Amino acid sequence: MGNGMAQHVKIVGVLHIIFGSLGLFAAVVVLMVFGGIAGLVGATDQSDDRFVAMPILGIIGLIAFIVLLVLSLPGVIGGVGLLYFKPWARILVIVLSALDLFSVPFGTALGIYGLWALLNRDAERLFQQQGLAGPFRAAG
Image (cartoon, rainbow, N blue to C red; front, top):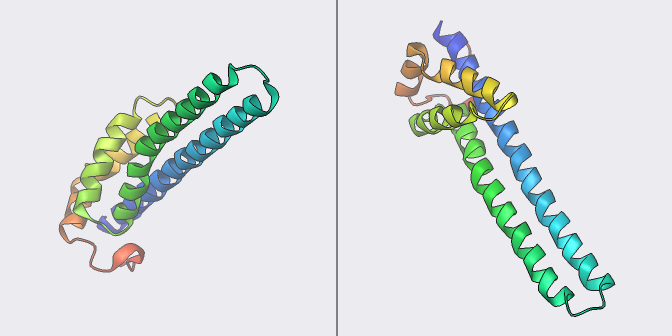
């Protein structure tokens, strides 16, 4: 039974890495889009308003980038930690899974699955052993 639970923990880890990576990708895209818009405003607008608009667009893009980075990076870090069965990662991903419940529909599904897998007694025992064999533990 513990072996099957180890597989569930790994899946939760991989899903958090994917979910977090998508957020990181979105952060970079937002930064590039707002930077591009600021550049277009500077290149096409001949009025003095461009000197006001360009920094505002840049700041908005930077703030959106930082917010997405702060929201996404813990999922990637926690997911990697789960692959190594690190106890701190279990706690982090339990918190993230609880927060994911509010992100309908994919986050909700990930949150439910993460909470189910990580709050299980068998999973708790896995983390007490602190991942003796690393992320690619042998089955059996």
